[in-house]
Length: 224
Image (cartoon, rainbow, N blue to C red; front, side):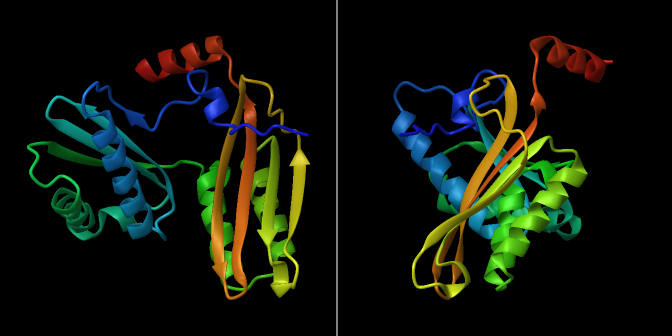
């Protein structure tokens, strides 16, 4: 039997980083609970804003939340009203009684077609609009191919097209080296809520191999 390992967890500290960046001995449980609740709130609130990931960083007296999105204009709103509302709501609901200074930054995702989380959201949206699942799979693969992906696998599972018995269907293209640690694999999953029940969606995208030397060269270029 195959033992499945989460592709991102498998590469943490190699070519993937943690989404929560802080250290605590006494308040670990409280901080973790806060992070989970804040992420859940922002993901629900910004459902149609193409959110890729939410990073939370804590230092003494400051909390910085970075939202990576393909539609920064939608999140920021007119004159920054959107971000102001989000900050106010987070402070009221999750940070009440604390003296933390909250900073909210929005970063644009340059290639949303190569971001597994955004691809999953698009697929869920299409499935909820009752588009044929095979067409959704095929279109997603074509978009990733055009964007420069080296390999992809897309999978849906559930009562597909309203069938009585749930099943799993997948399509793939290119190569997907899941056991190669230096391989840059983006992975995400979600569920489409259809009239027949939940349909699970999973996406793996292979973007090439990451070498330490190349990373250092890229960082040096950015610094210049």
